[in-house]
Image (tube, rainbow, N blue to C red):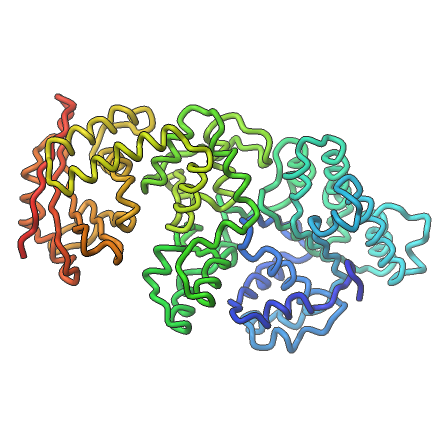
Length: 528
């Protein structure tokens, strides 16, 4: 049992001892299924506070010869697997955290040397007849042990990308690290001595040089999680169970912390969910993730359409994003799509793989990004906020003409971002126009099931504002008229969906005429 080679299981035991532990050992069934194959090279990237280190510690506790973990796993999901005991504590495991290594190494430029010397020293203690003092290469040492003992290794690297992210401008450190990775994992020889290679960090494999070093790795990311989707964060079912146990309002937890769409799963930030369960206060727990300071310069980059896209997403809209060109580091940005893709990997945006759009996942992140825009006092945001406040006031005052002209102004100013050619795009303009409502209202509910159909938008005031702000029930029309939108609300009894809501309700009908390019609005109070 060593620090890096065959560690004990105490780190994972600490996770099990926590007040809240959600069982993610089902992931081990996947890693067991690919052991000692060409599919056993895995890079799993996810944002901070999404359980990267806990997963690395779990895999170490399961595979490491340096401990006996049968009792530890005896009540967890993986025990149901037919191969549970077959691979339990059967491998020499090498596990290190690159971030942790920087301090004892004496700086990032000495990290690779420190890791190599430290791991070799521990391997010599285990295999003194095989690893002599003349061996200075870690891949060579692993190869020699495999030839002599027919043993294969599990290598787990936590924060694998820290040198890629933080030392992107230092070519010497980059080259040394890339060569280290290439020697460890690339080519025919590593497949002989490697049972499993598991890398976890924030960013996927860096394109260009690092990609050539690690192009044999299967990647599981916030863009495409595949089989790892239910293990990257908390699933909705897991959060529902916690809400029952800790007597929390599930719908409120969902509004604050839900939103990451990975395959068919709605994924929640584990740190945020654990915090609300134990601290019982709805607020943003995101600022302490360590990446917050990084996003301020990102969203202030001078790329066409970037600030408009951020405003649109803060308002509740989704924006199209091309994720294919981002180089997976924190220094090479060429356009707004690169910035948005980076924010997806950092967890500040969600990603819809089918629609190829980015969006702000929940209230917690919306507050963080709004705060980030205030840090630099965006003139665009300040001006837009004022326009939006005037629009909301006009709506509450039932000034239909002012509302129509306000939405028209938004349409003209944001036409570069939104292709204005159908009712769908009118919906996007509406969400942007009512940005200021987010202070007093929940995020608008789109396509709310009602009496006989679906209401386009429903804005419900937050509890603290319910006495002063009415609910807004909005119906949109295209090439018709605003009064017909109001008529549809009444005829199809859309207000039935708000029967439990006891406050005032305003009915808002908005129409856009494609020929005249004019907007029309009609507003009426609802009489019960």
